[in-house]
Image (cartoon, rainbow, N blue to C red; front, top):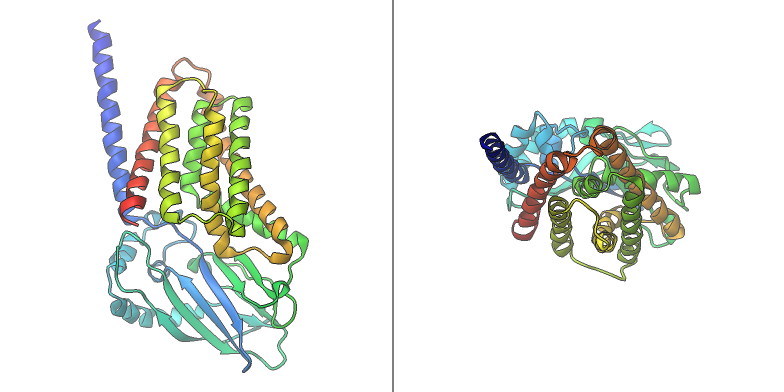
Length: 386
């Protein structure tokens, strides 16, 4: 009896320690880390034979050299320099950029008809220092001259600047363009005039890639939600039911969000997404079997996550002439990302331990406690600090 009592006490103590550590890590992570997001580059061709690109980016991350293969800024060895610059005033950061300007321009990979183009800084708009828990978005405008009779323009920049989304707005639907550009790569040659409609296969592959990357590695909250579903449902059949419910739901709300039929502020959606992760974690802790209503609850949460996806996809944009193709392809990418997460979970945990008598006590509960602790912090952060 004494030995059992001692073991119970040790387990209880360990749980409290784990909770404290995870809570502290979540607090620190939430306050110092920013998700590494792609820059948004809006390209315009002017009547005087010039081009202009307005780039919305995390300038501090670019200057500090935050490696683009990190999920968030805290993972970089240059995180201290990034954190230092976050507190700079707009004028102080502008002075820092002046020293970095030559390196930035040297990292651009702009071409017209395959020939390298020069560029200059036309304008820079740095917001005043606000809540340093939020990434500051600077607008940087570059411009340059196009060769006479140039037919195509290619966008790209150095690997260390990260990924980007290149967009061209136009009055005619078939002239608008958007594409996700992986770090270090170049866009397709874009027609300077005329139709910029993308081919079917090009649209499919680009939006599958965008959807996949939004889950792995960018969508840490969606990853934790899927991991939470897996922990209580290591058997394929019930897990597929839940994933199917989640897929159908986020497809519906994503389409409604992109079409503008349902518009919900991210200030509402993002905290609720965090709460959905908390709910799944709590249910995992207090039950060892799937409840009958779990797929319906997952469906409801899928609607929330779909609205979150809509926010991301709205920034990138969908071609009006291939709207359905782009939307379906994005969803396929999301599903491939989710299946990748499940496959990794199965290989690391499910295959080896799911049928043991202690699986729930020593794997499901600790993992759910950790996931729930992080999600609770996200809820607090998104409610009160964003």
